[in-house]
Each structure stands twice: as structure tokens, then as C-alpha cells.
Length: 128
Image (cartoon, rainbow, N blue to C red; front, side, top):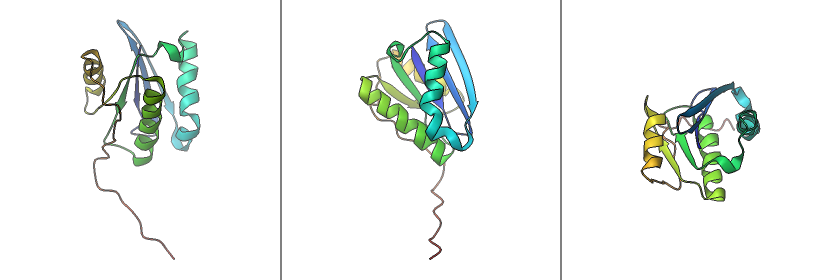
């Protein structure tokens, strides 16, 4: 089963795909993404009668989007891929899910996905 994740906005979008079976879920994460992302994934795995061990690959939406949202989800997915020896690919665009699934099916593995924020960082200067 492939886990697909997009946190480029405040709404976290999760999908599981296994052959013809597909499950989609959303969560308005707001500022709770870092604290609740793994619980959100696990909750939906359990609801679908699945387990972490059923995952065979990961697809990360790598941007553009929220700096914090992308940073959190891509770090979590990179960590899961490394710890479980799962292949991981990143994808962008409107067809990012299908493109990512096809890359995994071809045997591709980026090993580490890097986010694409869509612009330069907006770093404010210290007030002191």
C-alpha cells in the first residue's frame, strides 16, 4: 500500500492506494500538524484495518506551499522511509499523486525528498 501526503496548506491531505483500492482523508491541521501528524496517519490506518507494516512506499507532495507544513511532513516521511527501508519519491503539480505512484511502480526511490517552497524564504530581521 502506498501512503501519499500533502501538507502544503493548513489542510492535511492523506491517501492510501493499493491496486484498485483507494482511501482519502483530510484534516484541518492548523498549527497542530507537528503534534498530530503521526496520530492522524495511524488513526486512518486503523480505521481502514491497515497497519504500518502494510505500507510499501511513500509519495510526498513537495511543493510549492507552506514552509512549515512542507518541512514537517517531508521530514516525517523521510524519517519513516529511512527507518522502515521504504522507497520514497516527491512530486509536484496537479497530477502529483499519479506521477508519484507511477515512479514508485517503476522502482524509483529518491531516498530523501527535498521540499520546493515556490519562492525565496521570507526571513525577518531580529528586533533587538
